[in-house]
Length: 146
Image (cartoon, rainbow, N blue to C red; front, top):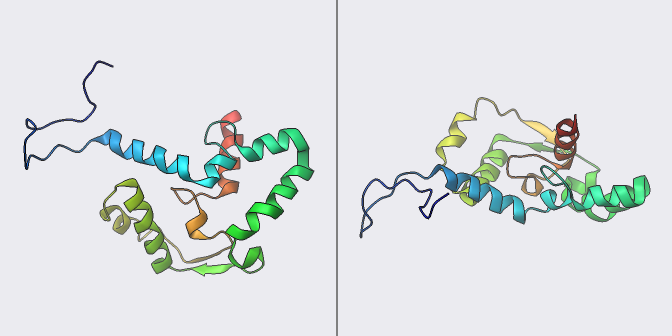
């Protein structure tokens, strides 16, 4: 609200002075990454999105055309054969996301026990910043309406 910054300062500014962790930085990085990611342009996190507009304008036929034009390239083997996503695939993807979000690698280690190898059609590098795909976003939007 005022002219101050949201960054907590532990000491006055100066050369070599470290600032305290800024919790807002994580969210601003997340926001920037969502702005760049095509999934969030197709289905907005809270409202709107290209795919939603196509459905409202052209119905099912428009959505099928959209899927044929844009979705096949973001699926493994054009959606014909799922790929086994291994723990090493997941770690490589997660490290990339963490770098984009400015997070440490420590959060990855905590998730090791939760990850299970599985087959997937959706390429990891074509997912949202939290691992979601287009279907996840659509389901989330539907649940938010309820």
